[in-house]
Image 1 (cartoon, rainbow, N blue to C red):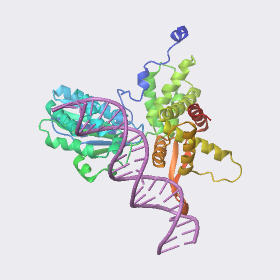
Image 2 (image 1 turned 120 degrees about the vertical axis):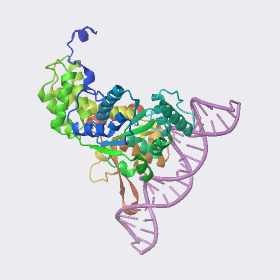
Image 3 (image 1 turned 120 degrees about the horizontal axis):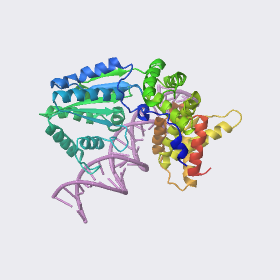
Image 4 (image 1 turned 90 degrees about the horizontal axis):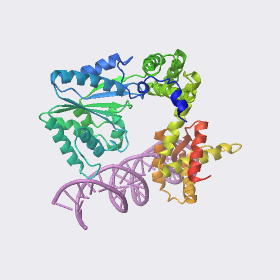
Length: 401
DNA sequence: AGTCCACAGGAAGGGCAGGCGA
DNA sequence: TCGCCTGCCCTTCCTGTGGACT
């Protein structure tokens, strides 16, 4: 069964180079930004304390990769001088890892080599242990908090205040925070007290254009694919598609990699434009179905009721009020619960679940006012036809027709 | 100008599971 | 074993809201 697979010629040279988390030797079109971050962190080399740095920019603009790239170089330079520098990278979006204040500090302690239980300790105990651990190390500590806006939105900005305040109490060490966020207005929403204690520096990453994406893809394809496996046309197409998605380089790399996987699976030795189209479809499909599958059954029931109502509305002939409102969704949801023997949640909770589905990009929910007929949310599905059909069949499997 | 609707969404707290230390 | 702590999911209660209607 595997003979064919083994005999088949590999089109990848180093697949890791096509992953968005791979840090390349050279980062194209980010010279200025790299220089800015570098100069902000450079005081570490002379034993001074750098300011906190905040990096803003939409998805796939190279924020994380640039931060990691500079940190790597800084670590090498610091090692040459014989100073002490520790770096901890934490993605605040990682569920069950750093999505609460407790988990963030538990994770920081774990990264510093301390043993901490996942739950059970009072948060102030964790703070004390963290403080003691950092101060004992007698070194500079750089904490990179990726997607920091997610955590602030969830638990508030107190932890940032506490994190920066620790510096005032420590005698031998110093903490620098590098916050990375997609939310341009992140800083404006911070508490004044936090803003002043952060005294941060800011850098904005602009989205890549199609030409810049093409250069990035070319570099990566050179490392990732064997010679002749991808041509200029294929790369241009990937770049153009990703440029439409707000210049997202991560998306461009995913497209290029998945297209290669599809070609490989079809036993072809080169990636074509057709493979890119298939890759795009697959990426969209995977994102949605995985999201839906990972939701709790109550959320799935809410989504199913939205799909059912949407279908009912579009199948009706003549003029009908096609708007889908929270109340309608709740009614359908309760009947689905009834037939499936699930205890229905309250309307208040369903309102939150609708908001969560909106955040996930599966639906769009806009608050509207119908005058004396009340204020509600107008809900529309945000799925393409083929993905909707797949999602529907997934939910039918779960709840029946 | 005031009323009213159908919610949105904030705040508080309950119940549960699970860990720690005495 | 018990009390205290955590996170998480949920309910209950409440105030706020925008615009059609009176």
